[in-house]
Image (tube, helix red, strand yellow):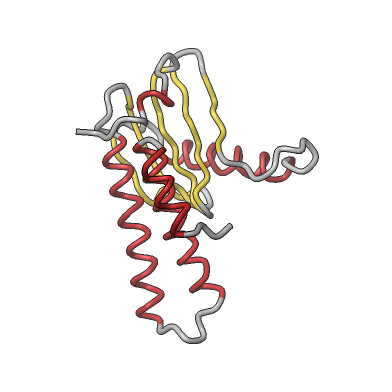
Length: 159
């Protein structure tokens, strides 16, 4: 799903902080996917640079999200392995596995349930919740109290 420069420009003017950060990550993820699929003209160093830029931006976003009040932890995972982490995450392995399995089940059933592409999953427990957001092949996880209004909180840029 390519995003035009006009769409990115309009999005930056109308969306809140977190959405603008996700849009930038989507673009980087798309660039990385494209170079992996058709890397005949790209050197290994070029592919590595694109991947490193993506991972650095993911870590930067994770580090920024944790600065928001009421966010206890933020992670980024791929295939159940955490690539970036900030804040309090009691069991990284369990969280990575939960995020992976949740996305696999949602992806497997999206057509049957007429959901379209999976964008996010929210699991709310008695005390806390986790929002899992799909970014290409990566999943971001944001942990907070179950009463935290993530939509409102993520509109504001962290200090």
